[in-house]
Image (cartoon, rainbow, N blue to C red; front, side, top):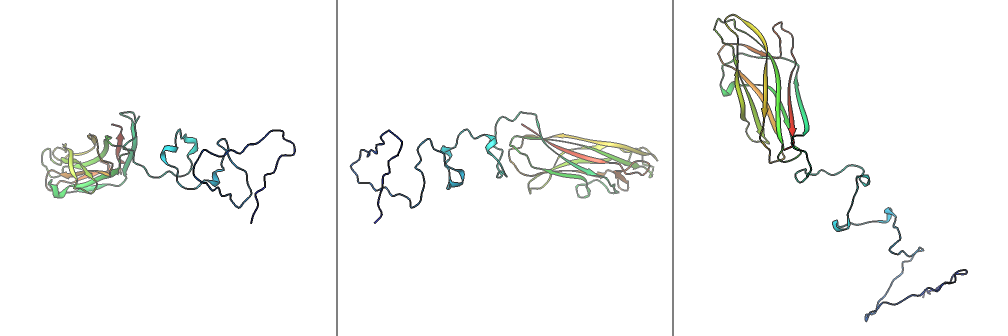
Length: 235
């Protein structure tokens, strides 16, 4: 049988009193089989000795300096304090080659010029899409003011079917005339209520059968840089 020994201090002059609690129930206190020091409410516990899960109610005033390493993926849907109108992220899509097509303009023959995807960080964000599309056309068929093109901007939410959200007819050339010009695209979406991937694509088709239109080149046959930029704007 093990003994319990209370060892007095050889130099102290105070008296230490061990007081029993007010209780009508028998209690058993089991001491650990190891050497150590008893802790009180003012003592510190080494972090290495902490195990288990800390409930949310026990966490308060957690500063950024206490956060290190990789944070888990979180949704920004409930975050507050985001300044409305601020640019939150930018996605750019470039084309350094050229795309030529000779078709008539109907929904089945639209050619994709540029396409890019973006996922908003927050709900109620809006997107601004702008693009510069250098292009060249040459009306060699003698048709007055032919060789114009339809330019459309498509939006696809997640895996749904892409739909047209903006479009116009870009002016072509006159009879036996070649022209190099820049077709602009500028669009602002409505607020997005769902955090998911949104894909925007610029597509084009010739308005007159047999006309050839080339995006990404100059009248001299040189490559011309094309870019589409998608910006998330805080709503």
